[in-house]
Structure formats: structure tokens, C-alpha cells
Length: 269
Image 1: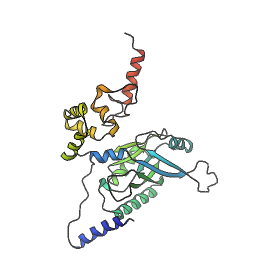
Image 2 (image 1 turned 180 degrees about the horizontal axis):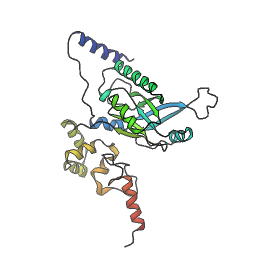
Image 3 (image 1 turned 90 degrees about the vertical axis):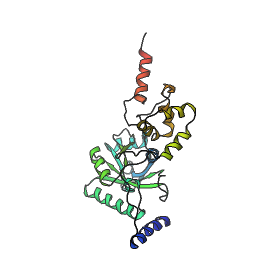
Image 4 (image 1 turned 90 degrees about the horizontal axis):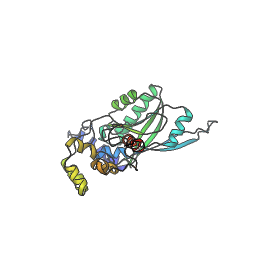
């Protein structure tokens, strides 16, 4: 455990002994910058190698990117006949850490829970975690194979997670599942985001309703202009797979782009 983690743990303990208040867990939900951070994370894991027929402990290494099809992992799932996979952590309930020690206890509880249900699971690590400062940019989690989505949702909810990652089929797309509402942005954060936009994009953002503004603030940075300036969308370049609400068959998505291309190819006037 890191020195900083030890400090936070015993700092809290000392406050309890003195009868002072200790920070309570935050309400369920996450902020737009935290949601954007989750959408940029990657997951590292090791799984028994397909070629390891002699049980020598040989492992295959994988690195999955959220929001993308991960071909090597897809090949693995197809070869060993896994139908789906869920990546669920027990750390940082509602993104509010109380130090490494409670996190490690929650991690052990989740591991024991998975054992008790006789599920097929392995250890994994989410990387690129930047919303908390003292975990070295990583968060332990588990990959759980071949469980239905409602069961994945239930596990994530029982361990107070705002989000988790699910690969719904062997094609290998790592989809971020959001389990709690996104909080309205702080005024200062909203102003900072608006100030980062220039010209036409800034003018468009000022005209948005609070609900639409919240949705666009949470999308990956590379998609901001796509949603702010729909008249500038290029049919020759890929569009986002989902709209800011997560809808797959909506205006502005890749599904919409392909439909427009089909019309451009076939329509006679």
C-alpha cells in the first residue's frame, strides 16, 4: 500500500478517535468529467493461453479500450467459446474513495461473492484512472465471463459502482454501462468548458438546453464538434457509434451515416 494511502487511512482513523466528522460517501452518480474519464480508460488482463494445452500456466496478455472493438480479445472469446464478459470493480463506491484499505476489503468481498456463485472470473486492472490521485492511475477489477446483463447490473449495483464495462458478445466491443445518473456540472466547470470552445462551436454551445449541454460535456473530446455543429458532419469519415445518450440508432450516429450513404448511392431523382 502506498504511503499516501496509509496517510489517508490513519488520518481518518485519528479523526474518528477524536470524535471529529469524517467525510461521508457521496451520493450515487458521477460528474461529466468523471464520465468522460471512464470513457477513455483501458483494461489490462491476463488469461490462460489458448495454446497452453499442457497446463503449464502460460498466459495471454490483453489490453482492451473502452468504446472500441478489441480484435485480439474477440478472437480469444470465439476460440474458448465465451459468450460475453463483464468488467466490474469494487473500488471507489460512487467514485468517492475512503483510502486503499476499504477498497481492498471491498475487492476481497467481491472476489468471495464471485466464488460463492461459482462464476468464471479473473483479475484485471483498469488503467488511465485519473479522477483520484493516489492509486497510480489504476483500479483493480474482475472480468466475469458468461453472465447475463441483468446479473452484471446487479453485481455493480450491490458494490455501489457508477459504471462498469461489458463486452456483450464475442465481437469484442467494450461498452461502458452507466448505472447512476450524471450530476449537473458545477458552474465553474461549465464555464471552463465553454471557454475552451471557439467561434461557431462556442456560439452553438450557448444556445443548448441544460440537458443537452450536460450530455455533450460528457462525450469524448473528439466528438464535441460533431454534436455541436451537425451541419459540418462529413459522410466520408466515421461518426460516433452512439449519440450522447447512448442511443445507437439516432441522428448523428454511424448507423445514420451509413443510411445516408446508402441513400446517396441508390436514390435517383
